[in-house]
Structure formats: C-alpha cells, structure tokens
Length: 176
Image (cartoon, rainbow, N blue to C red):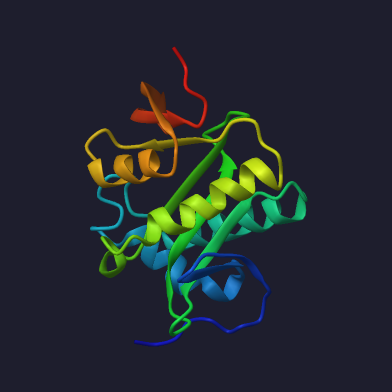
C-alpha cells in the first residue's frame, strides 16, 4: 500500500496507534476517495465531485486559520504512516454546536481505530479547547458509528434533523 504521508506538517494529536495531521491541498486524493467510496459514504451522503472535495479542504483550512482548535485532520497509522481516514471537530450543520466525527477507509473498519482516536479527540475538545458540549450524529441505521459514539462517552439523545435528514443525535451532556 502506498504511503500517503509527506511528513510535511506537525502531528496535531495522537493515540496509541494513530496520529493526526492537518489536511493540505496535496491530500485531495484520499479526501476525494473518502467522499466517493460507496461503502464509506453508504450512511452519509451522495458522492461528492472533485470540486466539492476540494471545497471541503478549503473549508477545513479556514477552520484551522480561525484559531479555535477546530478542523478536520488526516489519520495515519503509526506503524506504517499510511493514511486511513479523517477525524473532525467542526460546527454541526449550520449551528454553534461542535460535532465530533470521522470517516475511515473501509479496510480499516472494525479495528478500533474510530473509537481510539475519537476518545483522544473528545478529550482534546473538553480539556484543551474547553468545550462544554460535543455532539455526534449518525444515520439511524449506522449501528457501528452509534456504538463508537457511545463507547467514547456520548449519550444518545434521540432522532433530530440535520444535514437534511433524520439522524441519531448524541451529546456528552446527558439530557432528560
């Protein structure tokens, strides 16, 4: 498998097996793959065009420049520096709430990577940039992602409407 990491940017965050780095324009190949792979986007959205994937990178870089500690970062395995997907902390669908999320290439599913790095990212959100609330959303049929959100300490709140569809909504704050 081709190594995708150019080692050009600093490590943003790391877990036992993974590390995160800022996304750059040179990462368009994997970003577009994550935006178009039918298995990866099955529960998320329709495939994106190359232009839409490039716009995702532009929006991500804007988050970095705002200096609030938010963004989307490529995840690499420490053992071989291969990019496996991305993790995100960003505003949820036109709200002020901050969403935690991830997207991994399907060959890396079921290995605990999503849970491992999401725990680190949630800890960063709550204890470094001092967010009071972090939320997560997933398709109601995506049981795997719902399990990850629960494992990292988010509580299922109910079905809400975001991204023009009903989603299972989770928060680190238990609501009655």
